[in-house]
Image (cartoon, one colour):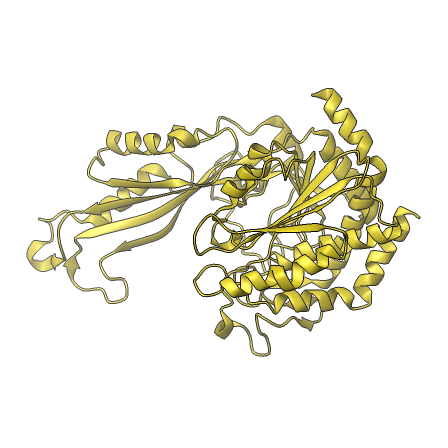
Length: 470
């Protein structure tokens, strides 16, 4: 038995076509979670696909209904070994966004994996069926070579509603604290920083949604008769927005900004290049917080963006002063932000700048910001393992620029969280023609085989050293 052999077996599994076959079977389940009417498909993915695959690896599987009515179920799986030194928890989601069938390029379907060159197309190939399939395939190869003995326990939670905002996940995690108790969280979702560079991220930015609304009267009024006499709510909201965010995208409300970019975060981002891929949009170098690098702006700082803005009838404008306007906004924010008081800061700022008439409709925090300390012992271990497997220097992101429900693992369960993504920025996730790259996927299998092997060989020592340092 050897690490190299485990990696070779994983690559052989991929090259044989077995992985393609497994992924094709899983993509064929139409597990859309953003609308009604797919509960049977969501359930079938667990009953007919994931549970049998996990049971074949020695997992005991339990299904839990969603506490939120009408939403997809959860699968909990556990593989225990006598005298295990520690426990690893992993995660995935089997649901996908809407297929958008009619918008896919000719010859492609969201529910059939199609291979074209270095791309495998299909809904869920990147998000998240392909990613948890990579991890399970690598684990299976390591288990086979180690004759079923890892030296650590493995627990899995798989949800069927992540693309709908993970309804019920927080409640299930909280209720199942004991069943999900572990020492390390290791999972995969999201993109690498680039297709070529293996990546590790330790958390994610949070999401806070709100809207600015101003209704002054019912209906519109002829601009020739009333222009210059009636306040225009579209103009008022535009100026209110301009008071919150400057012309370069910089946040103008002190309470909405983080205090600083911690030095450990700056150090981790020194060699991170954002964008530049063949299908990436060109970065607007003048946009965002002055004095920060592009990586620091999107990973280490807060942003405030307008998602949608409506006044009058944009599809059929008429010469009338509209009666109301609304701007839907959100913030991506990092650990250390005063999120508990975001609403108060916005309201006070609007009032202080003469916008007492502009209504603030605040929503709950969708996903809190999280970040594992980059100096954590598990981080160094993971980076070394990835580098050893690939011969490349992995990118370390203290947190993802986007958001995912990491808080239930880092905060509710109190776990160090390691995310090793297997997709890339231009994968078209959530859009027509979603795909993964063959070369990146093959390398990801090798990375995960190396990690699962190294957990057996080195994990007990890392776990003990981390416990001693706390």
